[in-house]
Amino acid sequence: KNEVEQSPQNLTAQEGEFITINCSYSVGISALHWLQQHPGGGIVSLFMLSSGKKKHGRLIATINIQEKHSSLHITASHPRDSAVYICAVRLDSNYQLIWGAGTKLIIKP
Amino acid sequence: SQTIHQWPATLVQPVGSPLSLECTVEGTSNPNLYWYRQAAGRGLQLLFYSVGIGQISSEVPQNLSASRPQDRQFILSSKKLLLSDSGFYLCAWSSLIQRGAEAFFGQGTRLTVV
Image (cartoon, rainbow over all chains, first blue to last red; front, side, top):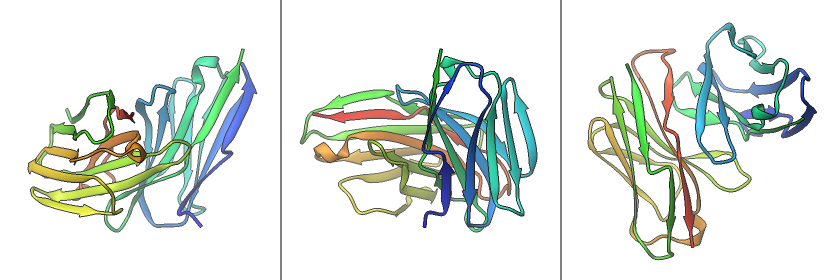
């Protein structure tokens, strides 16, 4: 079993829909990152969380430390949100990063 | 402010040619540095990490090597590229001392070996 699991692996939705991507982990962490990777490959860091909730524009990220679970939400989704969204956790023990496999999101107009 | 630079963004190299990808960090000292690779359809896999100058740990045996000639410089190299080396390479850094401090990510390099 992978230490970081993302779901779903693939998600296709219509423009305007509310999107939720989930990340569960089984290790002790000091922080969790959500990143966005566009088809060209470039990676953009969206959020870093160690507790609670963060919001940036239409993106919201939450984390529940006790349940070892984080969610990334996109409100009023748009085709330009189409990308791979990756969850990564920083280990509590040595600060290494462990990555989820990513969720491929396609928003249709 | 803390930033990380990784270049080039894209690279096409013939089989058997050498490789050198460079990553530099600004705004911090003694960072932990990481190289990751993402093969097609797969998640990011840790290749190398470094906790200091000249200190390199390899996670996966492969055709690649890493070096850290300066505190804020991390280089990924190969003497002879294989087709299987194609993929997306990402450099990152984090602070060991600052618990909960952010990790920073380069833009990544898309390598195609032909």
